[in-house]
Length: 381
Image (cartoon, rainbow, N blue to C red; front, side, top):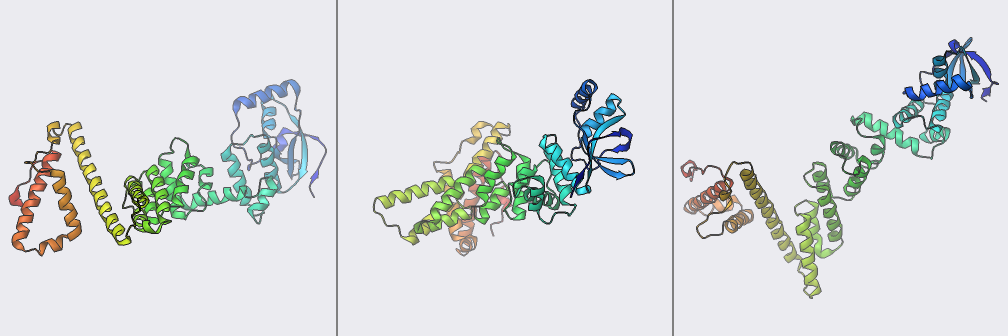
């Protein structure tokens, strides 16, 4: 049982600061205010110490008062001597500062971890009880610190942010935290992490990879997950759900497709599963072509905006034909047939195909403002 003596007067020279004091930063202005108050009114509350040897004491609580007395030039200070071990001293110091809200979040965390690593507590719950915290608080802090150290999470990521990722697979958790570290978002780290976590926990594996590799925007990922969950519940939309799970459809195209199917079903059309599969394959091809075309046009615009080519070059100059339609048609056929099948058409037809592709390639180069390739450099054999 702990023993506490009545208030005694101790020489300041006999008192040592606690090396494991929870608080590591002392505000100089506030310390000076306290010194001024002690100069006028004396020490109104004794400090708490424990014996460290003959006529030697270590501060448990009250180091600010101790420092202020030295600033004033006092020789003695009122104190209460408590018989306790080092762990008890650390707990008392922690509680005294925490209750007065004198500890920064980092100081509080470091003190808590130091207490846990004394190995005097069998479980984090025992530490919760000793410090007066709600069950689970210390466990979250301890687990977050261990995760930070094991996976080298930068100090810019707060402990609260790490705690909010609990439950995710470790590598996914690490990638998500590093992703947030690069850009917190307008709502801060914790809000950004919770938003991402809610998507990652529901998303298929391939979509999670796209999120963590930042090849899909968070808002698009959220919409994709919502559409995936909706499609997965309906037997007729299983092919669409699979395409979304593989990241083969944009959420805009998927949403339009669902609306089209719903409209047909409302009109009494019974969708054949095999036809739906074929339709989704076509939608995937068209979506991929649209994305490629979008990138092509963006490259062309960049070429104009950066002065690499004149704006007139953006116009597709084709002798009466529809350039985009031709490219789309050829690309679709290549996807459907495959290069090996095209080659089996025979050497002469292959030469014709090569010549056609040369023309298409020249038009592509013209559109982007690059020099036209020399057809003789292409091997037609």
